Length: 219
Image 1 (tube, helix red, strand yellow):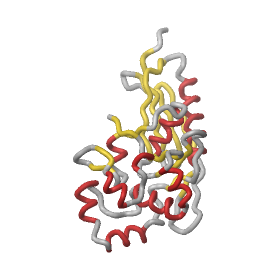
Image 2 (spheres, helix red, strand yellow; image 1 turned 90 degrees about the vertical axis):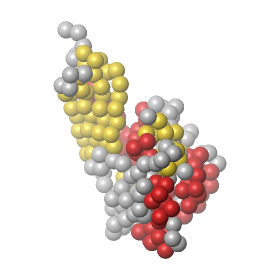
Image 3 (cartoon, one colour; image 1 turned 180 degrees about the vertical axis):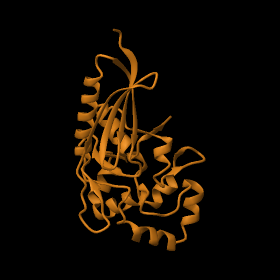
């Protein structure tokens, strides 16, 4: 029996990772799921261990591919992911330098109030299409760099890379060869100009995020 063309679909969610091998005709040839640890260091704070996310995702993907080996021939990989969660990692070692701050996290409410009081919200809405809210990625990075100035220094020096979970998984899946995101994930960061389809230097300056540490944006 010949194997059919298939896609490995990775769904990296907030509480677990799912991998499916999907044939061209839509049949699911294999499925595997595993949860990972939720960390709540303070009230309103939610964190993930990005290393554990990668370990769990790699494990379920490998198991699904093995389970479908007799039927499916993997010709591509697709990723869907928890969106506004941010990861910061070392470009050389590919190791995270801080726990991922999850989209649910509310620690940056004060930063949002500060920026709103400074009258910057309308400018950001026009460029990024978003309002100030801890939900989005930009203020999470502001908090990280304010709290850990050495991380900001290292990011500016080119030692660190950052991104949402899709970027993190692409980096690990390619052994560090590709640091990329797509337009839809980029548009949820407060750092992306949704009309010009590019990282916005002015927004990055507002949130004090080194633009050189952000992923390339691809279709």
